[in-house]
Structures are given as C-alpha cells and as structure tokens.
Image 1 (cartoon, rainbow, N blue to C red):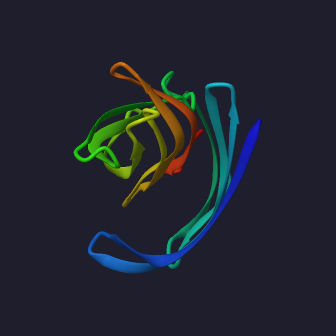
Image 2 (image 1 turned 30 degrees about the vertical axis):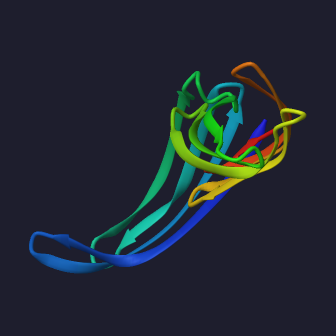
Length: 154
C-alpha cells in the first residue's frame, strides 16, 4: 500500500455578502493507494475571521483507471540514411492514457544490424535504447531505460 500525506496551511480572504474577510485553513489529507483504489481521508479546520470556524472531516474513495498499471508501449519509425546513423520519430503510450511524441537519433551498425544507443530527451522526460537489433521490420530491444511524465520505462 502506498501512502502520501498532504498538509495544507492556507491564509487568504473570502467574500461574503460583499464583505471581504480573512480566512485561515489547516487541512491534512492522507492519500492511500491499495490495488486500483485510492482513499483520501481529510480532516482539518477552516476559520473565517468575524464569522466562525468549522471542522472538516471528509472521506473520499474511488477506483483508479484500469490503465494506470505502469505499463507502456513504444512505437518508432527509424531509418538509416548512411548506414551509420539512425533517425526517426515515434511515441510512447503510457498507462495513464497519455501519448508522448518522440524524435530519435543514434548510431547504427548496418553490417550487424544493431544499434548501441538511441536516445531522445523531451520536455516531459527521456528515453534511451542502449542495445537493440533488427529482424526484418521489427526492432528487438535488449536494454531500454527512460522516464516520461514521472513513469519509469524499463
């Protein structure tokens, strides 16, 4: 079971009936993930100066999307223009439903039909294919590492 505790301390203002009043809030939410369910018990206190304070006791529980399984898939269209370098594009589809477009560049050995390193750094992360070979139109990846939008690829 994964647990994350979020403590929120807020100071601001609230408008009520045309009057702006100071507000202070202290809230604690404990996120607990078990299987595909996330539970969030929350408690705390919110005070509006000049009006009153109120206690907050809340509990929310919901199912995570079935696709949030940390799985991923890589699609790439790579070409060698000179038998030594590879370039191309593709995408990584993440288990959270997001798809990240990629442009690849790397070294290629045409004689052995292998590549040693193809990598792409993008705003949301990085993918590095350390070792791969080609069989027909299929790339056989022996070693890949990456992290995109917080999801680890390996």
